[in-house]
Length: 232
Image 1 (spheres, rainbow, N blue to C red):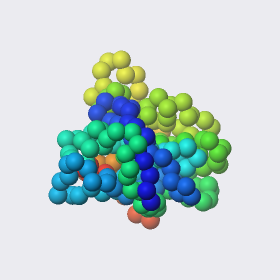
Image 2 (image 1 turned 120 degrees about the vertical axis):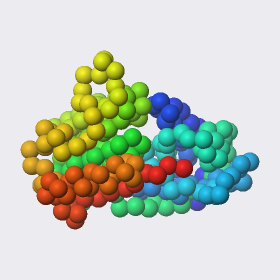
Image 3 (image 1 turned 60 degrees about the horizontal axis):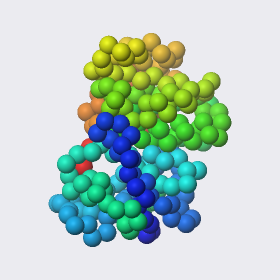
């Protein structure tokens, strides 16, 4: 589908959100991704002009949005420099990292860094529609300044949504949890750690480590959904 770029903005240290017109008739579930193709950019690399990127926008939002950590790659340099109104191509949606239809089991989101994007979309969607899903979101970052959507997620808290951010390198002003997401952190905040459905998104090493943590705690692979972010 052809669409157009609206603009970009910084949402955290080293992280930008890019917004696009939503093509007519385009629909998706919160947590899904798109294939975004830049059309004849001035610069490219061996990976080409297309990337698969999770939508950080919720389905009811007026526009489509992706949120990415900025690295010195041709694709991201072109995104950051792209003038408003530039044409791009969008294909999709793709992916099954979405909310289940039923709400009979608690849901635990485990996010590291930019892995927050699908969970941000799902959490906003659940809150906007007062869905009955009971969600606990754990979100690990180095510092509050590098944590995209930290304030927005804190403001979503309600009886069905609990937000637990943790920082590995925050200064003394940070009063919340510290350290990585691990078995001890989960045990402090989850009453029945083997009962929920677990969703993990973040760097590949974090996803694999947390899967091991959950398995060692008695969680079956069938109760774990994952998405790995490798960066571009």
